[in-house]
Length: 67
Image (cartoon, rainbow, N blue to C red; front, side, top):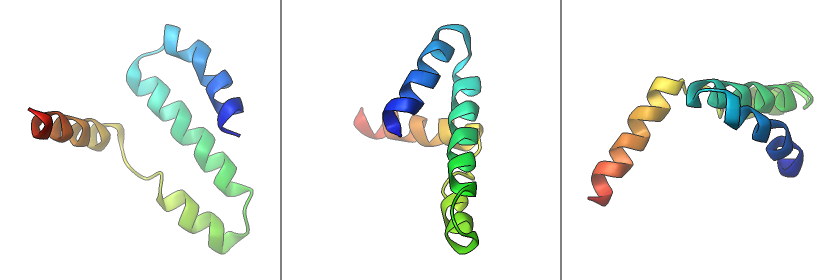
């Protein structure tokens, strides 16, 4: 699955912004979650609720900690 995802996202990396790539990956993961039984799907989907802005803030926090 990860290989398929990488192959699907790779062309996007060249033509899309970071936010668009992030959103595409999140959407793909949610789609995969939707294939699971309901209880598992809800738990799976909750892992992909982070907005791009929250993601960026977390990355910036990690960068600050490394310095």
